[in-house]
Length: 365
Image (cartoon, rainbow, N blue to C red; front, side, top):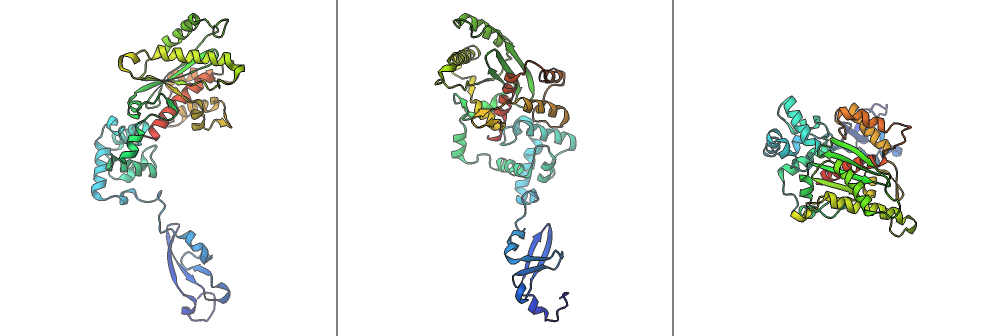
């Protein structure tokens, strides 16, 4: 040994353990000195002594999944099957595969167009929004599309925070949705497609609500004016009023919100009698708040800053979470500038509700 001791080497080396540390193969020697019998010395990287009880923490024989070559996890036949789908399927066909709905399927097609077909599964790491764990799940979905029959049948029902229940396959078939949030004076909406592109984002203001005897004719006139401006879509999502009916002091507000909710259901869901399909769905407000971490206790805070960040990311990031048309983005950003009397809270909530809907839908499909 280099320590200068003249004892025979076999008294120093009692056992050898080969471990992988930081990508290097190391050899540890057990020291035979009376006061060092529980220590190990690395002879390769000279990084000092390790307690024998700590060696299990250094054992990297089980590779970090994030650094493992994905291709080595599959047989040549399995790799060929996955690559065949990735290289030949259209965007619509890719969107039918678990975890490839939305922007991911578009990114695969864009990668193919720019750089040619995929030659290895590992190449997927170069595609935006794809990480090691996601790729493994995508490969599994391609190789075993049926999955677990029991769970798959159960998942055909709608998302828990949406009422009434609608089959998930019908939700996935929606090319665009209009998310609607209403308050005391405003009805706001966000028209968003399945790629999370904002097609329309606006609001209608009325000062005739909650006046006098709550005349139905006034509500019909005002809400009809808003509905006339709301774009056509496959589904309409209404934020469900969260005020408890047991709070008698807020009964006038509750009555107002429930009236608007009922009339929007009637005016937007007129085709129900023809086919029995619900096109207007109610969404639980707190579920959206939890998705974006906007909850403080039981109360939901403003999503205004989050929406401003989404607009900024739409300009500065290559693959933003939400896509805003450039010709309208300036007007939207001006609306949310400091000092503007119209804070646009309903518009913010409408947009976040639409984003959460698609992210819940795609991530849990």
